[in-house]
Picture 1 (cartoon, rainbow, N blue to C red):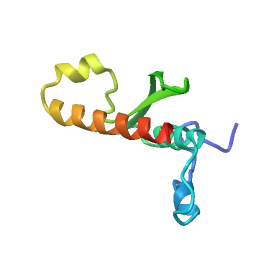
Picture 2: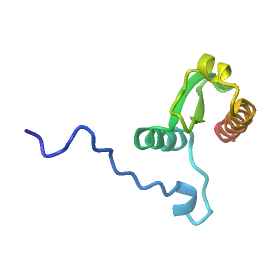
Picture 3: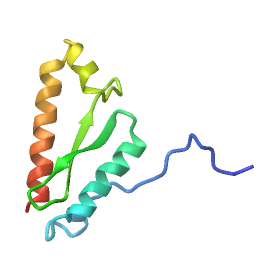
Picture 4: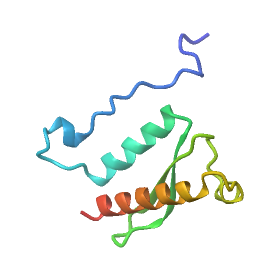
Length: 103
């Protein structure tokens, strides 16, 4: 029997590279995607999904925050409650990720 329960979530220090460098360095593409993957592993209300490629050929991701842990866009669209807010959040996150990957 293992000492670690399969229900235990891993511990991550969510301090960013930018914070560690005291604002002197930005995060690289791999650090950014790893940060969001780690968030999604710890918090069930967060999902990261690949939705295409950037202009430089790297995977383009979308990070979704949904209070109901629903990440199926068809079901989200059918749910009228909070639909405009969800679209706004998704657009902002996509823009930030795209901008960060192409710096």
